[in-house]
Amino acid sequence: MTHALLVIDVQNDFCPGGALAVAGGDEIVPGINAAMNDFDAVILTQDWHPAGHSSFASTYDAAPMSMTEMPYGPQVLWPDHCIQGSIGAQFHADLTTDRADLIIRKGYNPAIDSYSAFFENDKTTPTGLEGYLRTRGIDTLTLVGLATDFCVNYSAVDAARLGFDVTVDMKLCRAIDFDGSLAAAETGMRDAGVTLA
Ligand code: VGL
Ligand code: ZN
Image (cartoon, rainbow, N blue to C red; front, top):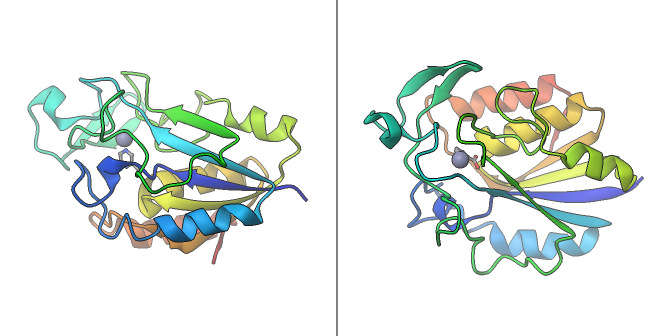
């Protein structure tokens, strides 16, 4: 077994004071730093959108957190967040980034959002993470980070479908919990064979 820690989107915009703040998002940072010592590999993801991204409400003068239909299905319209090169897109200042073997960016395609670290929201365009993990012989993943019900959830479900052994360490995650999204995510992850620890 080769076991990687996958740290999802621990960025300023998802922490208190950020553009898409997740309640308590910063509380998990010390625990994530400590956990890094227990794994064969540490991989960080970074939400990384161009200005005017198709997932931003401001792109359509729509209300943040309203829904739209994209060619690939329903999409939440978010406040502008994690814009490439911005302070909001930087990792939380206390997150240990030196231990990371790989930092994988996602959401850079202007036309498609990417919650998952593995596939864009069209569920077909790969980020390359699967190939990286397989070529390193990594077969087991523990996921932590932000947000439980969006990027952690989508990443965990995709990883399980790809055949990885997947655990989400829930105490090192925090949720947006928008319109029942946390309960739905927990059910979806369990149904996909993800262990919620
Ligand atoms: C995320 C909404 C939009 C996340 C990213 O990291 O969970 N959520 N972009
Ligand atoms: Zn995003």
